[in-house]
Image (cartoon, rainbow, N blue to C red; front, side):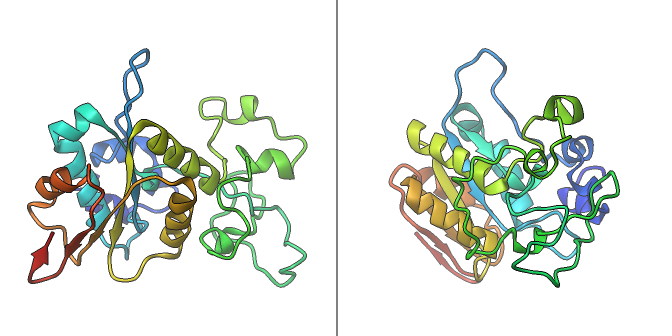
Length: 239
């Protein structure tokens, strides 16, 4: 995978979210050392950027945020793209409401068919992060044991909306914010994230652009405390 974050997109799922490869691509999350006080969170709302056809803008923004000493010292920057999570709507059998639904291509490692990923970013799905589903497999399979099957990451199969809302709440409680990168229209998952952010009441800073400007970090620092909107255009930008 090497030096450029864009190379990671060429990996076949689930390797594109393998943590060793994520680290080599400089996209790993940087958490506070154990025992140190938790930092306010800066939660990214971005399009998925680790697929072959995806834009690389979210990766570039994340890397540049991690390289800025001010943000490294004062914030934990959370990028949901680099973590492989679940969804409360997943099941090992078709949902009665969708009897003709086909199983997802990304099947379980054990070979069991999984249904429901097609709805994971649907804004009309009932979950807004309050489902409390920390492991969807535990709900769908009585024999599943979280400690035994994924004790190294107990939230590995947690609903992404539930986990994302927890980060938004921490950001709200500790003076952090959500940074939403808008590349044209919002992605469906971003619509869900923005709705949750409004419900939580966390500060939202919006960046609209078609490419990441060289001075984006400078202007982010200037406006983040005021929560103003940053609006970039291809040939001109204003603040």
